[in-house]
Image (cartoon, rainbow, N blue to C red; front, side, top):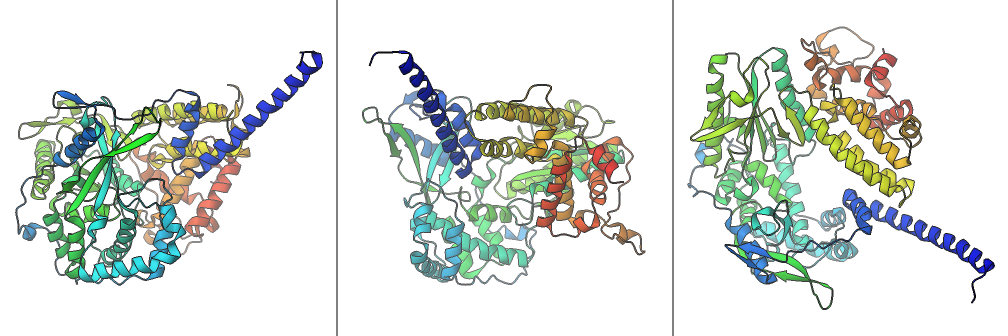
Length: 630
């Protein structure tokens, strides 16, 4: 066909339509991928990087000793040996249980037999993943056959409970080396990701349910521990820690915090020590034997993947089996619960407030006498280290940090805390449960780090705006922007540096909707029901108070007379601006501004209605909210 004006016009027309259809199809595909993903952030970045040349991150060579190895099986064996051999706890001293500060007068546990319906419910709650463990069974297969197999699995679980034996076939884990940072050719820069058999997850979930029920009924777990517990959150742990710091700073009392770094604490759990403690807690008889069987004779195999040059397909190579001698199983359901039982008596060995979130332990030490301050810090640190040694755990002194939160004290760098020949570094700021804590509690370092993350997200949203539809962009925004803004906002959301974070949020809105620099974001916040940072702060504070009534005193409890609104909270008096702007003071102020009818609702409806209210108001600062609700 010879080119002419008619052909050229039609070609341009249909080419435009074709590109439009392709673009719409890509948008639909990307939208579906993000919606269905368990890790939305990962899916979003995959979409962004689609046009780039992605080199698979396979391990092609690794250094062992002074030589490189390239054989995939040898590499897998090298990783497996490294992950097993690096855990070398000190020798266990038997019959040390008498030194544990544990109430040993508890009644023994009774574990009820499972029913097919119990197992069916557990199967249906498993996450849909493509990864499989040693058994090669996926959760999708289990869910598709749940009705047929739940009775059989229930029967096997009941036999295991009665016999006190955990099936050996379920005690082999697949380990995947995951690169962390720096040098890809060195073993120490990888961490193990463990995949346990999916059938084992069903076993463990049922045992966990019965075990946790007994633990809660007997109030075994210490209140200091907020990790891996129902109805406990990371915000509770951070609040309790900051409450101690802020109250002491307001009183002009010198106060410091020791941020202890336990070396691979989960991996160093010693089985005999753990089993002694479980018996003291009343976990005896068949259940004790079952957990002992669960822990011992565990094995692991390390897998690595390679691309076959000829077939261009990915191949899997496995190491030899290695026996695991220590540590609660990684990636398991029972492991975290067993670990917090293992360290449960730690707070009783220390004279100062301790904040625990899983293996994160932070001690707060107030001191009214400057002359004895350093001695108190040293003695408290020695108490922690002694407990760790007695329990076969290690502390990494090079990563353990101290912050002194009182401005009258010398600089953190000039205060020397030592243990044996090791100095404990005094710092002006450090990471604490995902927040950057600084000695002035001004949150500048945290907000700067937050804005770096959000700036990257703004770029991602700009790219996505041309490849996905609005619903997908909003899903992406909630996953990679608001989740970061929401985290810990009740602690830093009223600081002097909050405006920097709010500007970063507005930059994301401009990127999402391709707005100009001077265009107002306010209509877009309202139209797409996106909360501004001040509104996120108000919502999160109110929900925290509503969820934690025991942490705040009602005015009616301290002023004994009839009031129309007995839900009003007592306000804290503050001597410093730091305290008055903190969550300790602002939480009751904000909660008291809410209508009584709203505060009387249950937590889920309360949260939904308050969010709808804030979406409609689009507050750009906290003052607007406070003045509107005098």
